[in-house]
Every structure is written in structure tokens, then in C-alpha cells.
Image 1 (cartoon, rainbow, N blue to C red):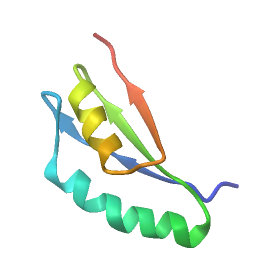
Image 2: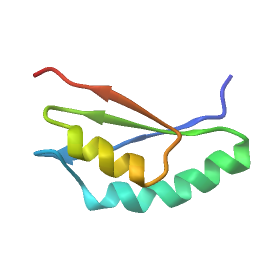
Image 3: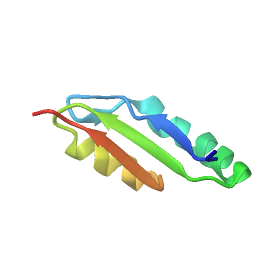
Length: 68
């Protein structure tokens, strides 16, 4: 069983929803407390800028799902 934390990074038109960046901090704290990593999932197309933004927020891994 893993202790990693996965957040869903909601985006629209390649822009992250503001709440996504707000959840990174408590999710990071939970991941550190459990000894896991913080991952984010970004779904949609296009998602390039959204992925850059969530990466800059400091997640450990990013999972993308895109179908152009």
C-alpha cells in the first residue's frame, strides 16, 4: 500500500482552477506526514500551461490525460 497523495488538478481552457493551488499546501503536508509523495492529475486538452503551473507549485509527479 502506498502513502502517496493524489490531487485532481481541475483546469479549463488550459488554466488551473484557483482552488488547485490552494490544496497543494495541505496535500503536501499530508504526504510528508505519511511518508508519501504528492502527485497531481491534469485532464483535458490543451493542458500545457496547466501542467506548467501545477509543476511550479511543487508537486512530486504529474499524471496527464489528454486526447487532442
